[in-house]
Image 1: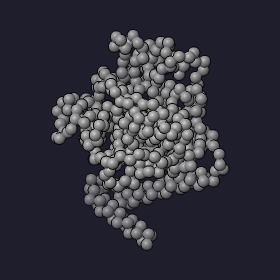
Image 2: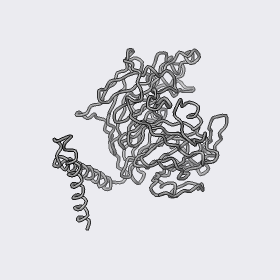
Image 3: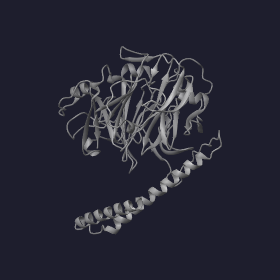
Image 4: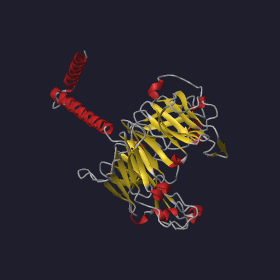
Length: 470
């Protein structure tokens, strides 16, 4: 029965291709039906090979002896070596317009106004193909891709929000301790803290399990409840030092360590198996040595995101962005070379060091065509902050030509690329969705205040507006 269905489906597909080809033959006579069929067959063959490799990985993991750990691999791919971007003192500048990198804008109104007491100033946004996740110090909220509310994943208790600042004591919080969330295959991981019980759980949420169910009744989250499936429970609160957890597929997942801990202990990134056991421990070779004591500075920023469902990671004070290839490979993809303006780990941590005229990474977003990269100079120098003598460098890197341009028309931290598509807000991404489309977001109130000509009927001040540059 299955084979008959496949044969019928293939016949229909070929018939449609033949019809489409005959209609287009006058425009492109060189494109034949045989060529299209060959392309489809090649893609099917590649998909089959990919699945075979994935199955080999699953079989290999199933045969591992208990406690086995892979040795890490960081060698470059000789066929595709990392691309090196040199940031000099005389970078070319351009005044980009949004129409040069996108053809249209899509606006999604996320109906956050339906959730009582939700404060958008304490939230960040992650997007999949079918879901939108808002997460922050108040918890985690799930919406469909049209912006309709689905359900509350976590509702935090035990935190204090006052004077525009969110605070909590780990011993008192029951809920989500703010960590970055990213979406792949419309699923995501989050960390759930039960402070009174002194334990932490890593949870996976698959919104497909919820269907179109609308549930405004907040349930206390925990292992194996409908908010998610527990992957690992850890006694104690040490796991709270992690920056984020990422699903790697086939039951594998990873956690990223903050720079102080990785520099102190030497553990940078951990890959876990389906049972929560450690499969590979990547080391941090940039270590903290002879720290003089006292408060330390978090100066450089870590970067982590999915690109084509592959985790990409640039540690703080490291100029290399890696692709994480499970179970045990960090593949160098890009190098961001600041030259003499780079800030080393110890140089950045010790608060007495002078970082005048030094560059610090702030943001990096990757699409199929571009890298959106923002870095600063003089930002952590007290005198520069008082006098305004610090600079933001918004850079657009064309991945096809490897050309870097400073965007000359963005001068401030809240600036963006001139929106000549509809006269709306200037654009600079807050993230990239699963399809590789950059997006930014703001509250309904901010949108009404700042949008020059674009208007959205019925927009509520406490709704969120997501803008995708397609």
